Length: 352
Ligand code: SER
Image 1 (cartoon, helix red, strand yellow):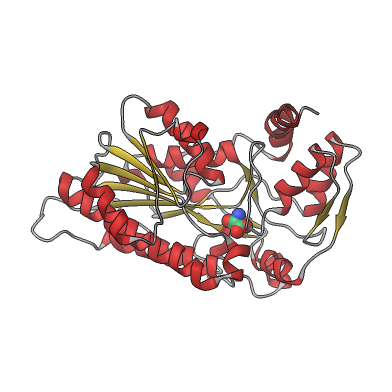
Image 2 (cartoon, helix red, strand yellow):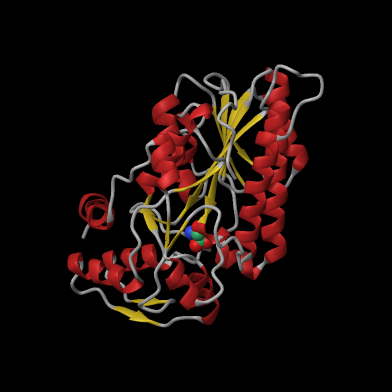
C-alpha cells in the first residue's frame, strides 16, 4: 500500500469536522483533543449510535444519535454541514465482532462505506478533497501459529495480512476501500479534483487509557488488569502470562492521529501506517501493575477464543515508515507510560 510521491496535498483547514463513534473510548479522548485544537474556530460534529452524555457533547457544536449503517441519515449530514474532515472511529471490536459477525460486518464495513461515500460527496460539493482519518488495528494481521508469531517478531504493514476475526477482516477491507477512494476514485467532470478523499490510517495496537475501560476488544486484558488493581478488585486475566502484543497509551494514540492528519499528503509514502510504542507480555504488565499496586490480585484464566485471537496478532509492529514519513515517536515507552501517565491519572481517578 504505497502512495505515489506526486499525490496532491489537500485543503481541509476550513469546514466542519465529523467524528463518528464519539461516545466510544477513543472518541472520548479525541473529541476533547479536537475541541481544544479547533473549538470556536471550526464546527465539530459528534456522532454516536447512542445519545452522547452532556459532558461529552459540550466538546461538539452539534451531536447526533445515529447509526453509521443508516445511509440516509449519513447522507443527510452532508446536506446539513459543510464537512471537510471525517474521523471515523465507530466500530465493533474483535471479541464483540466474533459474537455477532453479521452486525460487525454491517457496522464496520457498510457503515464505513457510507462514510467514505459521504466524504466523496462532500468533496464534490466543496470542490476540494475531504480528509478521512481511520483508526485501523493490529487485528488486520493474522499469524497462523504461535511458533510463526515468535519467528515473525515485528511485522511490517505488508506482511501476515490474513486476519482470523471478522473485525480484522472488516478493518482490512476498509483500508482497501480507503486506498481505492484515495488513489483511484475520481469525480465525474471534476478534472481539477485529483484526490476526492484523502484517506489516512493508523493500525493501532491495544490502547491503554487511565480514564476509560474498553469493552468488546481482545486487548482489553491490559487495561482491565490495571483498572481492577486501582480499584482493589481481583482480576482473572483471559490470556496466558506469556501472551504478547503491542500496546500504546491513549494520549499517544490521539496525538498520532492528529499528527498524521496534519502532515502534507506529499510527505506520506503510504495510505496505512503501523504505529507502535511498547510490547509487553501479560505477565510483564501484571508485574508492572504490582510495582504500583503491591496488593493487586492477578490470576490467569485463559479462554480458548480470546487466547486464539491474541496468538494470531503479532508480537510487535514495525513502525519505521511512520517514523520516517511523519516523525512518529511515542512519548510513552512501557516505563514512562506507567510512571508519567497511567499511575498518576488512575490514582487520581479512583482516589487511591
Ligand atoms: N483493541 C482492539 C481489540 O482488542 C484491537 O485493535 O479488538
